[in-house]
Image (cartoon, rainbow, N blue to C red; front, side, top):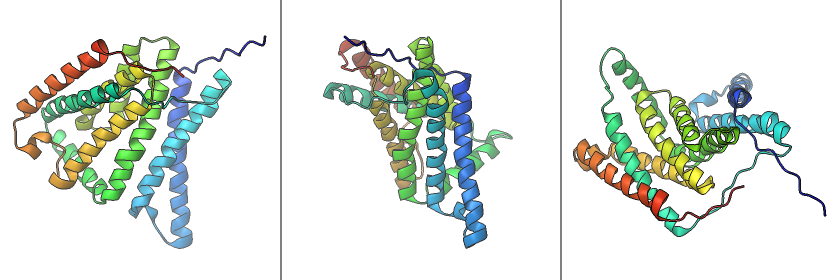
Length: 277
């Protein structure tokens, strides 16, 4: 009887960092060169078009994923990069979304404590606010970018590659979740999104580690970004407290109750059905 080959699992180390960063830069550089050609040949600067932001984002992330697959995963494992996108039981969905919402409330309270004025924070916050205003000018572009593209590409990289690769390397799941969440926060490159990204990244990492399915953190990520987009569209703010005219402390209290309740149910009470790929 022929034995099935034992495949090695990919790991995430320095080579993985170089592959992801180099791939992302290569994709972004390609789009920049394409824009230069467009300006010289067609006299059209694509940087002023909404589709250019979408194409540049896609090119960067796809190049990063391809570089990790081609230069790290395949040489070390003998097979292409693959992810589990399987669905799970209904109870799991009913537990993870309230848990995510609770952490969103907690993250908002902590973020609200970060100064938005002063010699450093003031100028930086104004720049960040202008940048967000430009991104939210076109609703369709923001929805495609924030609710569809970002959840898929970012979860593949931060949970599917970095977190899983660190666990395959031998790190404890808790450590791998925290590292991937911190890196996830750092790439947002501003203190206001950093806090929320780290906290939410921990929830996304927990759900991925518990279910082994990348579909669930993608859906949760999309849920978070969709709620933020709706708040921006109709209230010009991402704040639940400002939108509903309530205290930040009430938002925190509700967040703690939601998160702690559903975290307990998700991790301790109910059996989560999953399969490892």
